[in-house]
Length: 289
Image (cartoon, rainbow, N blue to C red; front, side, top):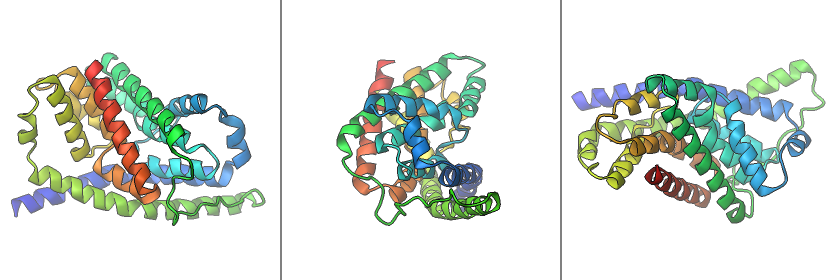
């Protein structure tokens, strides 16, 4: 009974923490759908695959929020004509390099910029590398077939009609993502209750195992990127800098709820490739720190 109560508490806390950012993500996605045309995006994004990935990765600094609401935004950008590899690079970097997360990391680590630079720097490197690899791998639209592939034309609508469309799209997007949030939060809560973190902590004797353990914890805990720095800072006495950076970078890119959300939008093979690339690049990057 105690474990069930603990599971319920963790589940509710994850959902409550994530819902505001899912609403923000759904709203931004709806605004892009209604007010941003395909021609506008085509003019803004570079044609060159390398420049488009780099540009998209750095654009993440303009979008406040966490990983909970970024998947529908990336999906909407792809529907609007952004190259999939660029949209995915944006999806990976935005939850880490945006101003809210940067400031939270700065505060969590005692007003020090060191961890901020390591975290943001590795996040940008990983998002760019993943995007470049995907630019050679993805040959067709990576979105699922049951996802509406056609953006609607809102150019002829008046202001009132556009606002109604924004509200409609926001509700639809929120409901689409919410089911994955609930499933992911339940699995994450169960993992936290029935897989004691003490067992994992005892495995971090070497630099390699410590990085792997912290990557595993980041995936299991599924903490929003606005709050994960405060959790990571509590591990400073047990783990080294490299493993903590791995925790801070992998979590916003890959956690239980986020992977489930990706499976709702992207084809299975793309999700598998993404999980593999992110895991490898985060591990190697953290190892080199």
